[in-house]
Amino acid sequence: MNILGLINKIFRKVLVYINYKISYASHYKIEGRIKNSENMLFVLAGYKEFLWDDIFLRIKLNQLENMEVCIASSGRYCDRLSQICKRNNWVYLSTSLNNVCVITNIIMKEFKEAEYIFKLDEDIFIPRDYFKDMLNAYKIIEKEEPCNIGYICPVLPLGFYSMHEFLLKKNCLNEYEQKFGIHKKGGSVSNPIFRKKMGIDEFIWNKIGIFDECALEYKEEGFSYEACASRTGIAAILFTRQFWDDLGYLKRGRGIGVGNTGDEGQITTYCALNFYFIFCVKNVLVGHFAFGGSENNVLKLKYEKPEIFAMKD
Image (tube, rainbow, N blue to C red; front, side, top):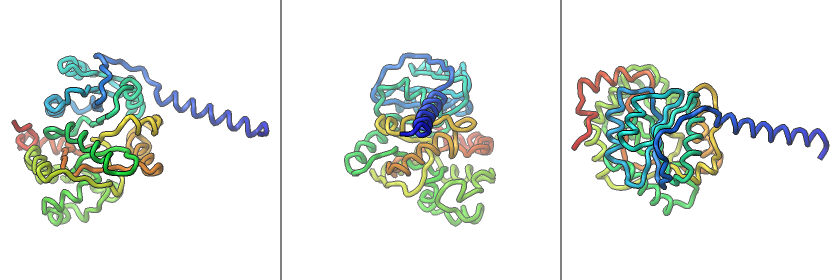
């Protein structure tokens, strides 16, 4: 190897090392004891306090005995989250840097013994037995499918992958298209109206109706799943330590580390380029509260029709 080639090789290694260090670079604080359980949930939270009572109650009531919970706030420390975690015997992790990729790397480093990892955003409503049903689904899919699994996800009506099927299932596709125009399978690139705050979020929640009843309808249809034909969101996913080790880590990314260059873009791109399959569990339904910027519209609906979001006994 000539001198120039050797210099280039060393330079590339230095860049890789610097990128790795940057991707973990933030002061952080951990409260609570990490128990090194096999199953773990981390929730990215800290910015939608108006949902915490609902979201964390559902998590608490459905938490598996052998699953520890980490509530993680990127770029801020929240006294109320700290208290919620102490009260529920959960771990609270906060970072000074607001970057989702960096905080995810730190979580995965600290919970190094976790083999099955659930990830939720703080605006996701989960149904009864969510963790049990998703974990069972993963193990069945793992046995039945001769492929590498990236992650599995539930049905998310207000989202990118499952929305079209939901509209068909509820016989409201024509009504939707009369109000909002043609709906295409896919995300906001295919459906830019998602980001225009024109009432789509409220429309979907009204069609869901009482969330727990709708989720039960899906569950009673029986277990089924499918390989996802396109990119999905990662607001509610389950993956394994093996997948994370293969991925390596998330590069810091731009800004706060979300979107195409952030956590979702990196994870879904890695799956696509390296033949890791993504599966949707068709009999598990979750509710995404609202697309970014539409929260106030759905909050109004929540106040007018609290039964939609309330947890059923």
